[in-house]
Length: 185
Image 1 (spheres, helix red, strand yellow):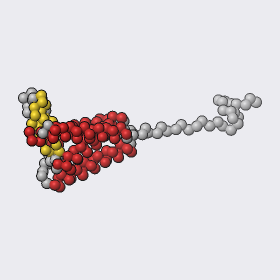
Image 2 (cartoon, rainbow, N blue to C red; image 1 turned 30 degrees about the vertical axis):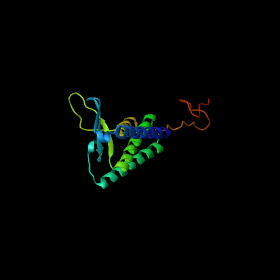
Image 3 (cartoon, rainbow, N blue to C red; image 1 turned 180 degrees about the vertical axis):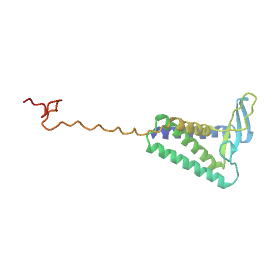
Image 4 (spheres, rainbow, N blue to C red; image 1 turned 90 degrees about the vertical axis):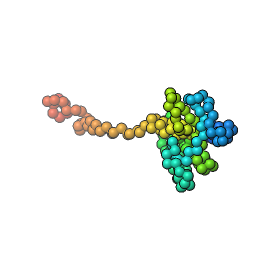
């Protein structure tokens, strides 16, 4: 439980810190784009009002608050699962990644009405139009890790117990051709 909490806290802080440094410190919100290692890594400002890759984007407040509620509900469910079960170490880390990333994006939706995405990667002549952030990476890695490192433990079927061997009355076993418990006449 502690490992999941520390992981979630670390991801949350890293996400919010990188967003603050890049979006506000480097003024990406006004500059729009900053080439770091063109074309492989660029800071490109994108305010995501939807889910991943802007799916479900809308300026409607109901979408914004609906996504906040869904993110909090999923985080609470994962937290409860980690707390009540005995997941592996990697599954606890994965749960923490997912929770920390989800809460980082929730803070953005509450404060700005959208998630601040700024990382953009392109390669090999293909320009990627989408941007993402540290929270998105953590959510993806956490969900993937939960699938990969969560194992269902099924109880082993009970083996039928052998009936205990019973000794006949008299304490001695009857031998072949020896009636009366093997006593000699």
